[in-house]
Image (cartoon, rainbow, N blue to C red; front, side, top):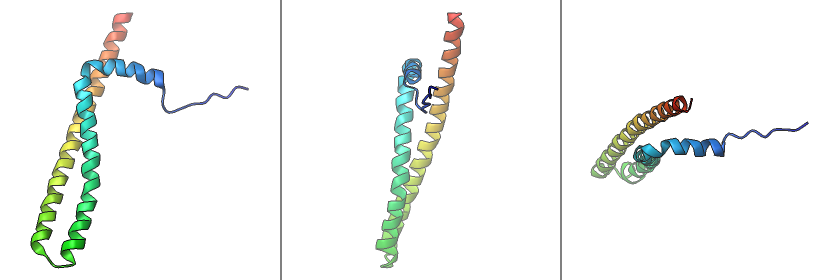
Length: 109
């Protein structure tokens, strides 16, 4: 009996998909940048919270705490903006590629 090894990643299929993404290269790069920004801003928020608590609340330094609170608010706004942009552009890219797949398959018939 021959065992077939199933993988979650199919390289030939991904290469074919990249061919269809080529006309939308700018949107693809923009969606990659927004997901990277989402990861960075999401990772920075706990660190800013730690700094706010460790350096300002323990010493009862209110102006420093306000600075860190505003920084956290800014990071949260940037994270939400990146999240919305990523959802919009990734969905638009996926629908455009599916449309391109259907129209190219229809043209091949």
